[in-house]
Amino acid sequence: MNVPLLDLVAQYAAIKDEVIPALLGVVETQHFIMGPAVAQLEAGIAALSHAKHGIGCASGTDALLLPLKALNLAPGDEVITTPFTFFATAGAIHNAGGKPVFVDIEEGSFNIDPAAVQRALTPRTRAIVPVHLYGQMAAMERLLQIAGPRRIPIIEDACQAIGARRMIDGEWRMAGELGWATGYSFFPSKNLGAWGDAGMIVTSDDAAAERLRKLRLHGGAKQYHHEEVGTNSRLDTLQAAVLVAKLPHLAAWSAKRREHAAYYSKALAGVSGVRTPPTDAANEHIFHQFTLRAERRDALQAHLKKEGIGNAIYYPTPLHRQPCFASLGYREGSLPQSERAAREAISLPIYPELTRPQLDRVIDAIRGFYQ
Ligand SMILES: Cc1ncc(COP(=O)(O)O)c(C=O)c1O
Image 1 (spheres, protein in one colour):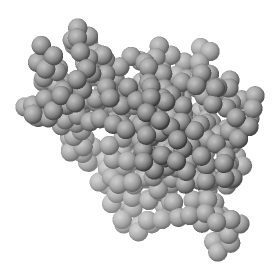
Image 2 (cartoon, rainbow, N blue to C red):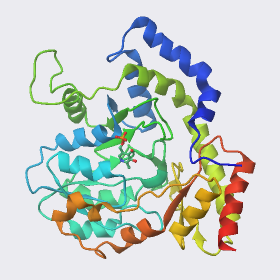
Image 3 (cartoon, rainbow, N blue to C red):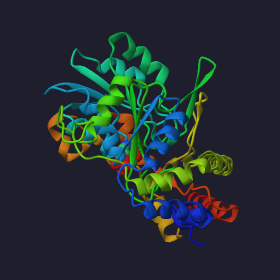
């Protein structure tokens, strides 16, 4: 039995009777640009995030780029982030005119290490961009303690963490609730995936929301009147309709992922050679990815491939070692936890529709490799 890394066709079969009529609804009105589904989705995602405003945009990349642009960065302005993330996090910082300052990650959560953020602060620090990697939140309360007194905005990269939450001072706080602005991606493989590219920013800052709404529309709220230069980064109405139809399923899908993660973790606990991902005790993880640390990782990957088991390396090269950032001067060994994670991490199938026999098949293949 082959087990794919992701099976979007299985999800499609389960929800098509809800999504297709929603799509047809848009087609029949021909209201493709900023149709009612966009505002509906914005309200739904803002509510989920305990945030005041949702601003739909074209992708998760733009959902990071636009708030960074709203900071009006000047050459040399620094933005602290993690190198152990998808490229877009740092690409957006660069494209907004900032200098990415990479700091190391925590060993357990794979997320940015607040102590390293503290050490990296300079008078040029203009923002901090933590990434809630694989679906569990970074230590926001510690980041806020560092950023708050200096009034440094935090932009959460929650592209992998929609609906994730963290217990802080006895209260659940959502991804998207505590940062100044937060970017989400609805890339099809995400926990809440569109049928194409789509993204959203959430914020509770009224002035920022107004500015971001302009920036996604060529800098003008009023047609043919441009207060500044923005871009075309609207959320497509067809994609919004798909997402509005899928949103009520998100909590159950994420719960299913947690169930699969618990099953894997129990079954793989005794396998020497792999370490299952620890969940920070304060976090409710949404398991966008289930990522092991594995000895002889590349050989394990080849074995799983041979066995017909989908897997992926997120991410083989930390961003401080990417050729495009060579001029920043980070040497091999400069961020050792990130470099180690890049050598050890391997992600397994974790999508909600996985069956017990499929999970067992993955577990058997891993056990077989380390026997
Ligand atoms: C952590 C992270 N940041 C940013 C992005 C960019 O999102 P998109 O692909 O929708 O532009 C992604 C997703 O691909 C991501 O996983």
